[in-house]
Length: 434
Image (cartoon, rainbow, N blue to C red; front, side, top):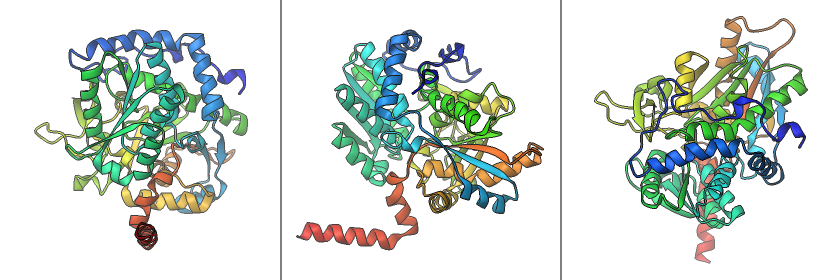
């Protein structure tokens, strides 16, 4: 890795203060947790500005995670997009699926476990939905030799069994959560209860740009390596910045990671894609920007899915990583300011897009990423309507491939290839009978 990837330059590397996200963000936690959160708020800026911390962080990203991840052209997808949308566009893919553990989550986990060691914490807890954050946390803990407990909704344990097996192989204890909808929000609730009881020796590795300050900014800055690399790679490969950057949004860490490097470039449009599930009108969705209202949830003020009387509305998505009824406060601010635009994609559209990318480019994306791919026709049409198509060539659209789809094959087969699922079950049953 060249020196330019070693330490982010300028004041943008510094985490924000409470309230940096306008009316969103803040610290809404119990008195028991406030000392731990305040300690993080003090120590995180010091660590991030410490050259030794930066060198160790970027050394691990280089030698262990495999960074920088490449930017790949997607010529056959681009040809299809021209046919589907009637717009000449060049699609570039930021390949976070090629990281160790198969997703962007490892960037954040390495940094937070490094910080936990600096703070003298001897135990790590985490929550996970799709399982990728849990796998990444378990991986970082195995690397550093720390015990790890991962909370996971029982529903997600069932649909992400491969990642559960990976976490256990890495030495983590996976604790299924049966309360509520047994999905990501319930796993977060359980992790918070654990943290309250063990705050002296435990660090909670939050997996997205959500929670009480300083977590949203800390996770964003640890994920910003995605955007910093992609920005330099686009300039080197294309000779210009992209016209648009696209990423899926649940809590929003992969999106904020890539968006962060382009926030100061008004000519680069930012598009987040959230899960409309079975349709917003059905009530079975995770479209927080589209249908959420301001509220306080999981230690932050942001947009939250809630009923008319202020009760939490359960979220739904075919993608376990997008199945969350809130969104990070910086995304709420970017939406309110108009700096980023947020679209919705349904379960069926995501399944179609998973096949589309696999069959055109030989890349099987996570269902989360598939939401971003599915939105491409609508995005390029919108860019063209806004007269952003240039006479000197096609639109340049950069998509963050946040993770690979191995973990989602069981879900895919249930929906699209049940015969293969039956065959696998029959073979496994035969082995057990033997």
